[in-house]
Image (cartoon, each protein chain N blue to C red):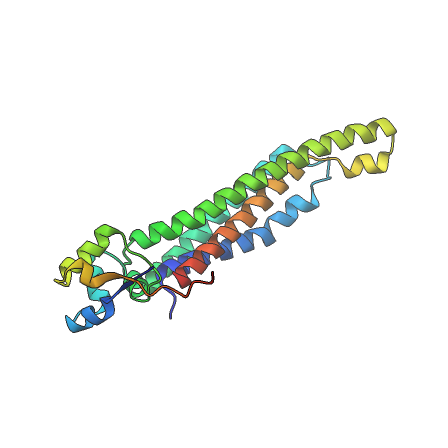
Length: 73
Length: 159
């Protein structure tokens, strides 16, 4: 299961830049970029702060990609 | 992607370790079998290293602050990257320490054996001096610092 997110889409929809969102939730722009690229999994605290700032439910923002790779066995 | 302030700071550390290895380590390497060198000379060299370190970092960070005025937030991603890179540094340090202790012990043992056999040339080759010990420690520290910083830089670029 891969933890994915809709952060980029939601952020753009709400009119925030990466820099602005980062400043609002107390992280750097690089951290927002890393989350959007699925390179970095944020802590629960940061995920909740982002969801609150974007005014969206956390499970709508972060979700598990349930499409598993084909089992080799 | 352009380099962030944190990434440039890491590059400053890497450059320092490399410059340190090229400027100061040769002195200890060249004098490790020099029996005439005094502890005062070693202390003098260490003071020289400390002064160089203070000046280097003061100048480097002042220039960095001058050219990149924007303040960067330290967040949980930084903590994660630092914890991973310092963990690697710590493991390397621990591993190197065991190798170092093993080397020193084998050195004394071989020295004793060679002393018994009376082979003066081999005896001299296993002669670990005070300066030799300082050289080994400084070399290990420089090596570990470079590896740790390179890994930190790699994480900043990929995570």
